[in-house]
Length: 315
Ligand code: NAD
Ligand code: UDP
Image (cartoon, rainbow, N blue to C red; front, side, top):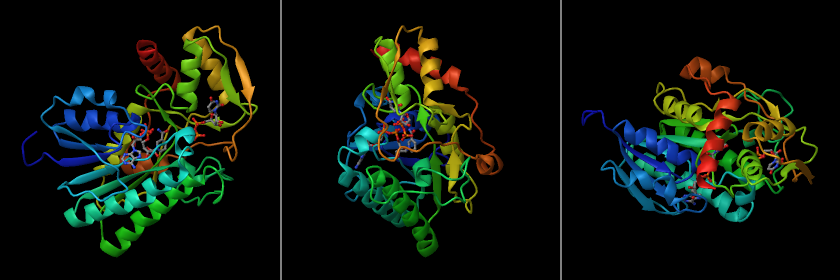
């Protein structure tokens, strides 16, 4: 890439699961990438292979504090994403979403950088409309155990749109649906990594509730492609735009598929359903198809096979 086309790109949460894959793509495309992370749920091993690249830098920093850098683009991914981790220190979770957004929007305002927010399907809460289109405002409990994450992300979206209306910032908001793949932490707590790790260890797969609740699972490479397309989309396209795989599976179906693909002798075990656990979730991705010419390409069975290989290699 010639020097003029080369961008200085900040990725917050860059040592996490999604962030590290995004850093890989941006570094290999020849950009100057700065990864900022406080290692709350991230892991240095996720980006260790990038540390020797001359166009990659790592800064240990908490986004709830201001940051002074010169950049052209900001991907704001910093925030624990697994319910187990975001509920461990809920006040810090809200601070990360809200103060983190304010600090990164301030940085974008000062530098004129384009900024993308990693929002979430959680803004739809336990949805009454299925599948969920972007114009649906959601059904979210403001005082429950998931609220620190759901409302924190909703407030971050509000801040992004107010900075856009008030300060004319170039914003992009992605509503990410459940994403999985290599580099999820074995103790992450989310369902795909939990089931695979349990199956490979020949332990029971823990199904919360009766397992009839559904989710739509997107392989990480597809998501990263969508995030980059959104960042590079026409200036007046802000989103919010759903990024996810419309294939929908119950947790019972997922458990059966994982047991079959790992060849495990594990059985399933039913546990109490966590509070406010959404019953169904599937993205309407028409907007992403039309605006970004994007749709997922990796079916669940293929993505699971790659993720199983990864966990086999590290366990
Ligand atoms: P992750 O927990 O693996 O990564 C989050 C990263 O942010 C970690 O490296 C963590 O150390 C870092 N971080 C947390 N708080 C921070 C702080 N205050 N300052 C600096 N760094 C901080 O999660 P992920 O799955 O990679 O998710 C990345 C982003 O995408 C998150 O914003 C998440 O809300 C969003 N998202 C992910 C999914 C998904 O299914 N993976 C779905 C919806 C939204
Ligand atoms: N889940 C489960 N067993 C687990 C972990 C999660 O049955 O070991 C269920 C959980 O109750 C939820 C779904 O899987 O219905 C997805 O959970 P996850 O934490 O991955 O993401 P989220 O609830 O945020 O979509």
